[in-house]
Length: 101
Image 1 (cartoon, rainbow, N blue to C red):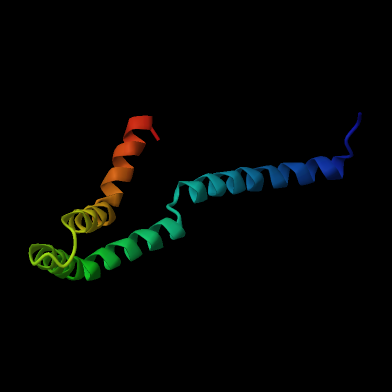
Image 2: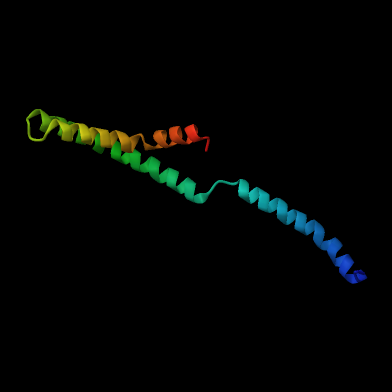
């Protein structure tokens, strides 16, 4: 099949632009996700704000269990929940490391 000369010249002009577009697409994929950046910042801010609240909650749970207002199992469950909330990122990183993700 014979390609007209005009179309062949246009192909020569477009080919470098196509390579440049592919290079830019590759560089765009290498950037971090804005959602991941925002989620990480939100997590950091929430944990910073909630740290004093968690300390007060552990103190209140301990005093309430000490004076037999709640069961000790509720106190242990509350502390375990606080540990899971604050250790979630480390647990996720550990599990991802186990599976090689």
